Structure formats: C-alpha cells, structure tokens
Amino acid sequence: MKIQEIIFSNFRQFRGEHKLELDTSTDKPFNIILGNNGFGKTSTYRALNWCLFSEEPRLKSSQNNFSSYRLNFKTSLDMKVGETESVSVKLKLIDSKSEVINIERTEFYKKIADKTSSSPVQLKKILKDEELTISYYDNNGLKELEDNQAEQFLESRIINKSIKDFFFFDGQDIQESVTRNNSSTISNHLDILTSITDMQGVLRNLNSLRKDLLKKVPKSSSGDLQGIIADKILKKNQLHKKTELKTNSLKGLEDSIEKLKNDIIDYEKIISKNQATKELLIMRDNLDTKIQVLRMEYDKIDESNKSDIIGSFASIVLRREIDVFDSIIQEKLENEELP
Image 1 (cartoon, one colour):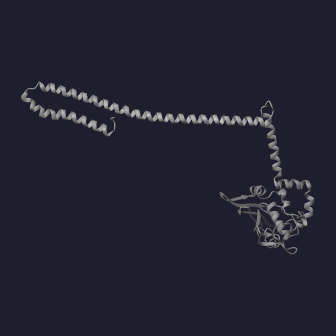
Image 2 (cartoon, helix red, strand yellow):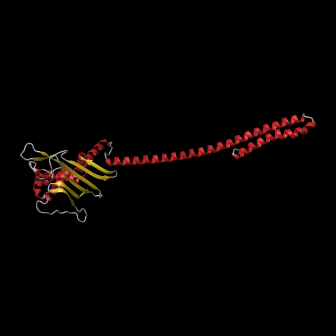
Image 3 (spheres, rainbow, N blue to C red):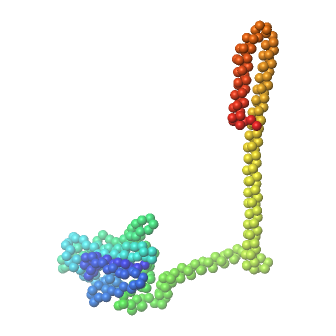
C-alpha cells in the first residue's frame, strides 16, 4: 500500500486546500520532504497520523488557545460568529493491484460568542468531533464507508493501530518511541506484523487436533501408527476396486436391459402385423361365405331373370364388398401393418 496523494484543507498552517503528490514508481521508492522549520514537515506527519489514527503526535491537550485546534488560525480569525468551517485531510492510497482507496477525515468548527472569558469569541467543534469516509471500487462497483465501518476498514485492511510506530515516526520523536516500545512490545508488534502469532496459534491447534486423532486410532498388535495407516490405505484401495467392479457389472446389466427393451418393441411390431393379417383372413372368409350364399340364391332364380341379376347384383353387391376389401388391404400395406 503506497500513499499517492495528500490533500490538506485548512489543516493548521495549510490555509485552504493544498495537494502533495508523491511518487509511487518502483524505481523511485522514496519520497523526501525538505523544508525549513515551520514550513509544514511536522504538520504533514501529524496530518497523516490524524487521518489514519485520529490522533496527532506530540500535541499538548492542555492548550486552550486557537493553536489547540486543527483549523487554520487565519481561517478561524476570519470567521464570523455563527459561521462553520471544516478542516480535513484526504489520503489517496494505491495498493499492489493498482486499485485506489480514498480516505478522508473531517472535523467541523463553529465560532460562538464567549460568555465566560474576556475574549470576544471562541471556536467550538460542532456536529461530530470527526467524520471519517472511505471510498474504493471492488467487483460490485463503488463502495463508500463512514465512521465505524470506515474505522474497522482502516484497522483490518490498511494498518492496525498497534503497529503504527513501525510505519510512522518522527525523527524528533524517536527517543520517545523507543522508550514507549520496550523489547516485549516490539516483539508483539513484530509478531502481528509478520503474522507469526497467527501461525503459532495454527500450529497449536494442529498439534491439539493431532493428539485428539491419535487417541481415536485403534490399537494394533504392533502399535505401529504407520502400519495402521498403511492397512487403512490398503483396505481403501480394495474397496475402491470392488466398487469399480460392481459399477462395471451394473453398466453391463443396464446395456442388457436396454437390448431387451428394443427386442420387445420389435416383437410387438411383429405381433401387431400378424394380428392385422389374421383380421384380413377372417374378413376374406366372411366374404367367401357371402359369395356362396349369393350363388345359392342365384341358382334358385329362373334362367330368364339371371342375366338381369348378374348385371345389377354383381356390380352393386359383390363389387362393393371386393372394393372394401381391396381398400383395407391397401391401407394396411401403406401403414406397414402386414408382414
């Protein structure tokens, strides 16, 4: 995580808005800020601490004049009674993936009449003591966090307050930093910084889990844990082979069942065609019977009337029966119902 830009707005001697751009290229990994005393080097350091940690190093809380406020002194003098001004510091960070995170901390002041002092007016912080906002983009688009959520994001994603002394310290404050951080504190900070504490906790949990598992392992005649594990692996492989054989057997049965289903469908088609043939034969026999009956009736008729009957009856009755039979045969053939 690199600081790409710092924007001061009415922060101490920075009246109005001032922007400080820093180089984040890999071939220029250092930024050096030079200046005479009183030109804002320490204020820049304080601004970074205030924006990230809501505190300023080496600031006396007992001061009661305007210098105890972060609001620029000249800005406060120009304010009228009842007017409100704000002071803010905004950091633009860039992470290893070149994604930008904006962090801004703001404080509001209102000028009010002083009823208890000879001074005509005084400044008073209003609304909230501070407002913290964080904005960044992720896969779901723009994210904007405020106050408590923003503070939690700073602690978990940017920098933990407990290890800030390893990243932010003033040369004039280095002796106090060393005194404040004894060897035990430095060791704890390094553990947090390198995640050693977390890894030690993981190792403890794994050792505890290993002991619990050893208690549950059945005792063998040899008492050899590796031998027990080897036996378990062998049994597992044997079971796997049995399962594979059963799976292949089931696959063969499924193929046989599918073939039987196809054979049943073919037999059903053959039976259907034979049934249709049987029905046609019955119809043909019925037709032959009708023809015999008609012939017997015909033989009983006088010779003089036979010629008329042949001309009319054959064309009306017999022809109609034969046509019906022919049409049924043709339909059966077209529907492939005959063998």
